Each structure stands twice: as C-alpha cells, then as structure tokens.
Length: 235
Image (cartoon, rainbow, N blue to C red):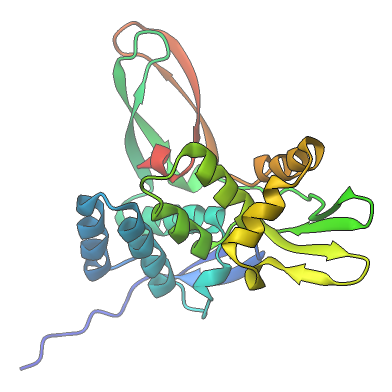
C-alpha cells in the first residue's frame, strides 16, 4: 500500500523587493531543509548560496529567473520563507557593545522589512559618457563566493563591475555583459576619483535587510541598541 501524500501546505504572499512583484510561496520541506543543512555544514559560501536560491525557487509558485534575483531579494525572500517554515522567532547571539558578553536575543522575522530607494540609475561620469547602473544579481554573488583568495580591493572591483549595466556614449551603448573582464577592469582603472565615487555612492545606497533591536545585557546590564544587517546577522 502506497504511503499518503502530504499536500496541505499553507500558502503565503510576498513581494519581491527589486521587482515589486507579488508571488505566492509555501514553507520549505524536510528535503529542502536537508540540502540547506548539508550546505551549511560544508561552510562553502558558493554551495550555501546555491542551496538558498534553490530553496527559494522551489517554494515560490510563480516561475522566476534566478539570474534576475538581486542580493537583497535572496536575503529577504529566504528569511521570510524560513519564518513560515521553522518559526517566526529567530534566537540569535549578539555581543554586548560594553562587555562583549554573548546574549541570546529573539527577533521576530515577520517584522523585518526592506525598502528599495528611488535612485538615479543613469548618471554622467564625464561629458558624453554615462553609466547605467543595476543592483548586483545572483550570478554576481556566485562569482564573488568563488573568490576565496581575492583581496578586499579585488572583491570591491568585482562588485563595482557587476553593478554597471552599460556604458553610454553619444554614438552607442556598450553592454558590459558583452565585454571581457580585462576590458571592464581597464575601464574602471581609467575612471577619475570623482566618477569612481559616484559608483561607490550608488552601491552604498543598495537596499539591505535591516532590523533595529534593543536588549539589556544579562551580564553587565548595559542597554544595547543594535542594527542587524544582512542574512548572516539573523541566523
């Protein structure tokens, strides 16, 4: 006799931040949690990221191209799917800012929000040359996760290159996806400090998953006000 099929999972709605697209999702299953656990045990950032994105795509009903998911889409979607899968309260360890004692603090994952600011995605870097920018997507995350031996400077340049969609001149538009890494690197190194700062300002304005939390240190009684930021702070 065949075993019964369990198909009465609840469905929830969520808005993908970068696309402002409303989709339906289900909690993840034990088979998906198993893959996540194996990835976490590997401590390989590329494997962890791949497992997280695979879980998101499995749980969302509507078809979504993984290459269009931004870094903050992945963080936010996974956090909300996890909240409906294993519990809406996450207990995390946070060090006191005074005595550095590790406190267990509860965070309600449903309270976490993410705002996408309205910023100019196209700006001029010198007369006749403009850049069209974009938020870094899944493919960029996978590339950076593979850069185990890269310096902070190399990773910064990789991130900047990933955020430039195209270079616009009076004659034509150059899509960076059609250019080699060497040509992109040469272009970035030729920028003035003023132009480079404009790009850094765009990246600094990138939406991030943030949550303000308050707790009293159980050891020294110091009142802490901490801003959690990014998926690693929440799990």
